[in-house]
Image 1 (cartoon, helix red, strand yellow):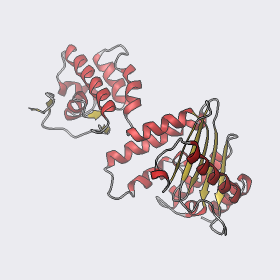
Image 2 (image 1 turned 90 degrees about the vertical axis):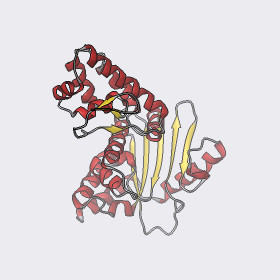
Image 3 (image 1 turned 90 degrees about the horizontal axis):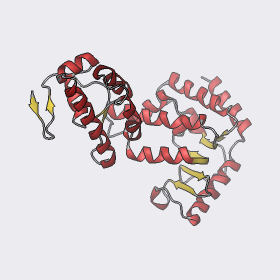
Image 4 (image 1 turned 60 degrees about the vertical axis):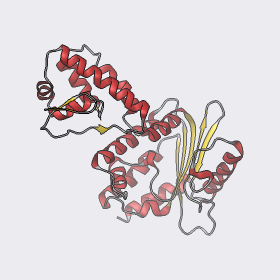
Length: 292
């Protein structure tokens, strides 16, 4: 057994279990994880348990216990539930799941998820792949797995979990108005293989049945196309404010300046007009699915 730089003991053996690594550039998130780790360690020591004993009782490696206690690993919800029971914390450790939920995903994605959660209207155009809010878990995993330089498996799983969590927007009440325009090629590209692709098309049909969701297809055969600059999205909020992003414009960063938003909204409106209407789009997706 050795002691690492943060003063936390570390087991010399043991294999890491599933979890999320801490992003060193996410200072607020790292501070929360470190605080949770200290609490777990304090409860373990108060229970008179060594890290190895605690790990055995939890079904995790000793090495993982040290990483969690040292703030170097983000514990999953099931870890917190198990720790609460094993250490007799009477719900105090389990209650920290809410704190961890706020920081377990990358900072950039957390900020996007907060905006989506507050939005009353979302309009998006996707040109390269299916929009993240519409992706199945399998499709998202395949997409992140294709990234080069390659993500580690831990990074892939963390990003997939974050993407899936954002999809709670569909069950929100009151429901926001959601409008998506997908380029035809995104429906025909077999990312992840034929079965993953088929399930993704089925997911699009399922979501398109929701009353507050519109999915449109932009056919490749269109002679005019206002979205040749790339993907774009606009989020509108209850107070009348909005945020937009257009690939390749304004530094590809979210903008809220009315003069920039007007440009993005104009393009989104023209794209919707140029695309197949929702009913035609649904028939088109069904046709593509039937061709497999």
